[in-house]
Image (cartoon, rainbow, N blue to C red):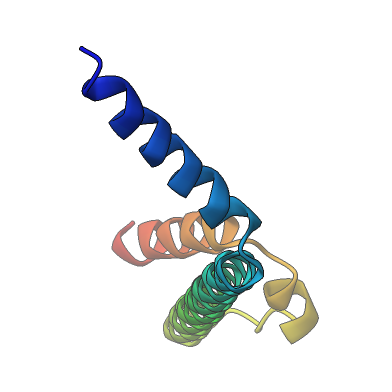
Length: 110
């Protein structure tokens, strides 16, 4: 067992010296800073993706509204109804526009 003790003390001493070595401390700090920079980059990429997805979703929503407004206009024309004001249609939600289109189509078939 006596052989193991000096070896353990030597290992402990070497470990302690590595903590007090300024070049290793700088290296550890540099590694942490590099890791933080990598995390910041990943965060920026994730934020850019979220913004792009939100923008794409808004474009899809706008196209859907535009299509529904077009359907309302066609139904109004087909039924010889006066066109609703654009402001009224633009203020409606997608659900409201879909219900209006369904209502107007019901008039077509009735």
